[in-house]
Amino acid sequence: MATDPASQRAWRALCPNCGAPVEFRSAASASAVCSFCRSTLVRDGDALRRIGQSAELFDDRSPLRLGAAGRYQGAAFTLVGRLQYAYEGGTWNEWNALFDNGRTGWLSEDNARFVFAFDAPSVQGPLPPANELAAGERRLVDGRAWSVASIVRAKLLAAEGELPRPPKLDGEFDVADLRSEQGEVGTIDYADAGQAQWSVGRAVALSELAMSGLADTSEKTLGAHGITCPNCGAAIAIQLADTQSVTCGQCHAVVDVSKGVGADLAVFKQSNAGESGLQPQLPLGTTGSLALGAGAEALPWQVVGYMERCDVPDDGDAATFWREYLLYNRTAGFAFLVDAEDGWSWVVPLTGVPQVRGDVARLDGVDYRKRYSYNARTTWVLGEFYWRVTRDQRGFNTDYAGTGAGAHKRLNREMAGTEVVWSAGEALDAATVAAAFRLPMDQRVALQRDVAPGPPAFSPMVKVLIAVLVILVLIALVTRCSRDDCDTMRSTYGASSLEYQRCLASSRAGSGGAYRTGGGAFGGYSSGGGGHK
Image 1 (cartoon, rainbow, N blue to C red):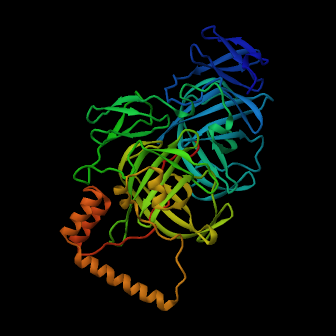
Image 2 (cartoon, helix red, strand yellow):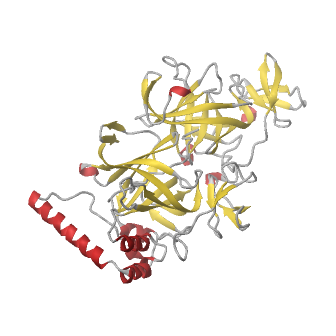
């Protein structure tokens, strides 16, 4: 635990605006915000000079707060300052961490995760201008290769506490996030037009920092916070600290709370494709025990969000649909369960990026081969999401599958707007999912979509025979697809299920549609921009 801030050597002065005491715990700090009148102050010799006034912080229910302490890489630190930013996709916080040895760093909130970063004392060569960066490209920065993850236009909403440099109080500026193949996050902050700031960090779990003094929302365990649906007036309970969008349980409208509870809430209605309402096969609020990865501890994961997505075919073929369940654990954060035509899988967002050479990507010693590239569209959502959900949200996805001993591993790249997100995970069998969430036996049949992790080796003649057999079966199915068949699908899976809707579409079109196995199965998603900032 960090030393009590009150016992550290400090420099104190009176606020020139209201006369309240202002304390600097670090000799390196150049600015502070008066906790009484919100004046933004800079040190001018032994005096303080007021340069403006910070707006009030809005309650984003972050588990962090000033005075919270922890340890990072064996060194103790205390949170002494905070910057609250906004961009088109929502908000984020950066906390100024003062270490006992005098060093300062930044604990930033990163798409429902955290990144600990430090300002680079020097940079090899000039930093690239923001207008020369494009999401997804590779750039040489500070003498190393980086992949550009996002570029956003941001503004400072509010500040508090002690800061290493004066905050930019007015106007907007660019922030670029870059990722390395070593799992690092690099950030270029263009707030100072004359001198961009470069920092480098790594992702951390809040549980790894052994923190004390957190807010009552520590580990993001909250009592429900209510709002009123702008569409129908029903009460909506928000459960998670990171929620940016939430679905009304009454009218299924999607409410944008990315600008904070109490702000003007944006809303869009969803048309229900089913007769009785779309219901996920894993009900919202249920908890299952899953070990995500070899050697990982089984943790309780709660279903907090549900999405239905499809590809956007450009050749007239029928769209392929899949489902994504957003899972939450208090200490591990968020993960996704993906239900696609070729089976189940889990994925989590990556902080770094894999090595990509042509159609082969390499991550943690495993080679992945490219399978599909396609445009994806979000068609239906339920529950809460830590990113801003918008109507008809789209992204461009590329799916990869592991090779050799890693054939069960999955990798996905999704580009949406000015952001690129990589996700990685593994295939799961339906029995594991059903057992984890304790589904009744009569509901488990709907989960059975398993396929072998890799195709068996057949001779050319056998492959031809299999292809002919598959074609004959499809022709038979198309010929037999009737209203009675669809009624069977409806009674088995429900009126709003993907299976029933596809059967109706197939019977009307007179063809079975085009199912791309693996299409979207590896959990690509869009957080709408922002990356670590």
